[in-house]
Image (tube, rainbow, N blue to C red; front, side):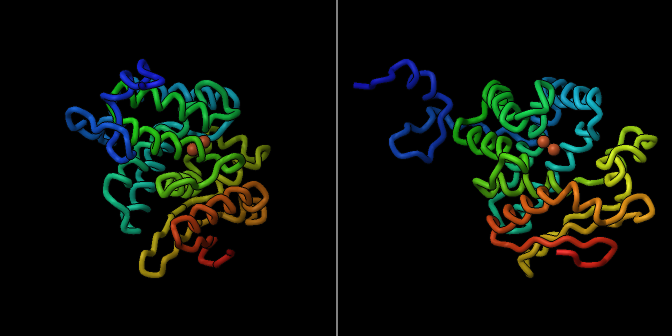
Length: 249
Ligand SMILES: [Fe+2]
Ligand SMILES: [Fe+2]
């Protein structure tokens, strides 16, 4: 006898296919595309409101530019390293939704984002098997309390940590006072170079050292670099950083 008949009935129509003992869905569920997520009116609200909340407390830009870029880079990482197309798409979806929890609170926003994404994706009809993969990546993206628990998670971590750029600074007048703003403002160009042949990922930064010294970058981004290295290791590639053409790690 089924110990949880109610839960089983509720889960059955939206379950995936790769768990032994879990029934296949009656009809194939059409995969939810990245474009569907990005263009969804509810997603637009959550992304924009999360960014507005961070603007209020003085954080750098975390809106459609940031999450769109993270989605794009996460997709490319998995594609270039030969992972399945759908895995790359799930990384893009996770990348787009990874910061919506900031609409609730900056603290624990990775986990909050994951729970919010679960509800959104469920309402859009994504299968539970895919939802779990997406929210596992979202909930692990933050360098302080996250780990690469899957290739999708590793790709989102690498993509998120690579977005250091002048355009993220909301008020350039603040660069004298805020080290995060100063470091971001000093970065004129950032590119995450995925070299599938050399099995390496390199974050290539072009920095105006008149604005911020390279040491300042390390001062605030050391934990990000360590998270990136860990994520790269999970994907079986090395991680490096170059600043103005000089290899630093
Ligand atoms: Fe985040
Ligand atoms: Fe982020």
